[in-house]
Image 1 (cartoon, one colour):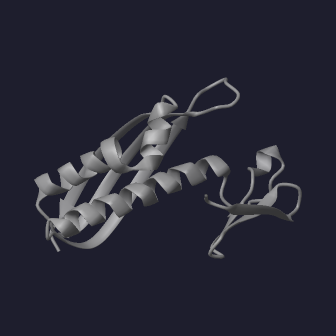
Image 2: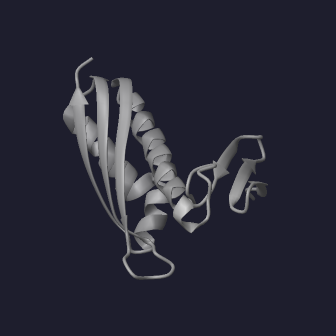
Length: 141
């Protein structure tokens, strides 16, 4: 079982979440809804989790294929449902930018396997009705 502790630390809506290893994340709502920019918005955290989960998968797959990943950046854009409460992620677009001695076809396959098979965050979002699109770019390094 995973254990997370969340405590209010700042103003009305500023929270700090900690895992069992002591890693922390600060969360808040937008100033428009009473927050003070103390931390990341919870829904943005889902996009960050998607990037982290998928990135770990992709690097792991490429390492097994003896590809050299020198740099890795992800650009993630999300669009939420309009006029609904709760407002779920409806569309997410990811651009994976890899640098190194990497075969583009292997990179595409690694990204596909992550987003469509291995990444638990992507699977959770997809089961909630989110459409995830992605592209990959490789620059020699």
